[in-house]
Image (tube, rainbow, N blue to C red):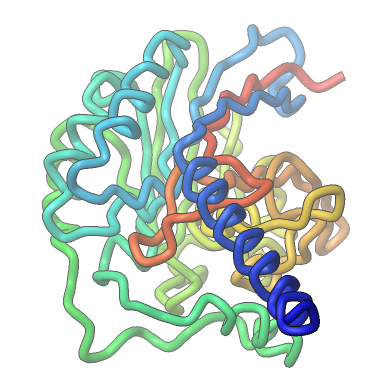
Length: 310
């Protein structure tokens, strides 16, 4: 009897630890944080600008806590808002996304979409991301456009953002006219499903603007290389969820693209074509509805303070 009890003690302990980890990961997915970073990219003599970077909201109907937290960020009084996509994880959640973002629709803003804005999520085995990394398949530069997958009503978001005056950067250029600055923007559709068309926006920054920014959902290296080589000083992206399930004191295991895990979230730099750009990757404030967990990687938004170059 003692032997039998010892035999089952370890599996039971592991099962209890696993259940506790899942419970914590579910709780952490609702532990929203604000990240702040300063980026020295403005011309000398300009006053600092505050940009609120939102990404990967992945709204599901009924997520009132997430909506309230997003609305509370209006207290930051940013000069502008940049949304780098994946707002939806539920085709019925458009009204709730717009409710959450309502305080910001009166501000200057710009947006691109991600694959989850276009397509409804599917139930997948999370372990496949780890297997793809181990096999090197993340170097394939994205997935084929989805076929036979229900669509999300992305056009409702587009119409609402456009009506608010936000700049649609879907393989397009745009402009943010702020009281103290003129910011040119160049954006791409989601590289993760190969909708990016850099040739349509190539040509580099607008030299008559105070600052030019590059905006994209998924930070694939081909896109980062193109923006950086063309001379953009700052690139904003999302998509990675910061790794979502990370190892404490180690970090992310995957990025869900070909970006290295050292730059899975936060501010870093990228070099290409003899140029250097700052890269900010948002860890996002949501998760796919079928994997509503985060571990050692809390959901976040970022307040970027753009400052003059030294």
